[in-house]
Image 1: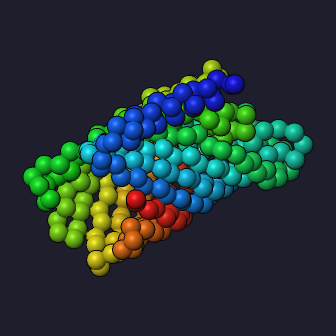
Image 2: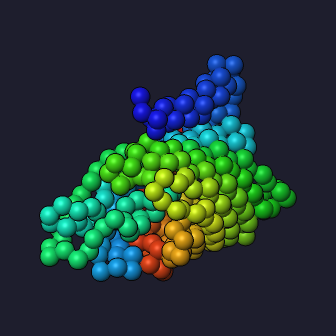
Image 3: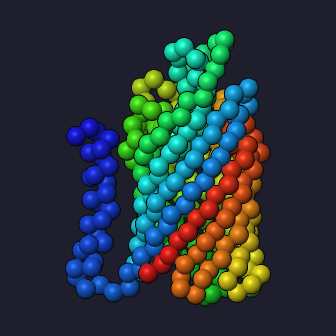
Length: 276
């Protein structure tokens, strides 16, 4: 068994065993959530070249009291340009799924052609603790830790082959049918032997409006520093719409526009989730 697979299996066991123990001990109050999402993005990242990425992600989470443990498994399909005779792909997937220009790529070729690679992406596990102050209309706080596990490996340029470790914090304040929130995070980036990645900071702001009992509109602004020294920070704005059915099924559609060369020019996605 290769090292990335061993790390993944070990982490999954560590994640699942506490939940199994709670179930066997007769603990009540476990709430499960499953989701399936798909998104597609494209951009040139400030170059004459282009890259397209399709991401289909299966998610599973379990809540117990104020704690939530989540797991996401993506399947990726990335199309980037390569020289028609030999050579390497123009873009690769870097830390935390960022699209980065491949430094080994040679662009002065007489002909460039599209090449598509597909495969399972890196698994992400998240453990979150929620805090509420002042009752229903008070500020809700979330503190969490996240690990990106190197399932994919670096062979197809769909992963760095290293684990990333993040600390996350967020706060949300409701105002009737409106709510606003802010979040911040810091990631310790895994560094392959041939890269000089640096750790990253991220911050975001979001607002939502429940304009009907089951419908909600959301607006989000995001910023994340580049893992590459001298690289461009990723800045984006997203608009989303979600509908919650009485059965507990939620459907959400989103559109994202990149505001810098550090992120995709445009992307869209659809997610379906269910709580049980």
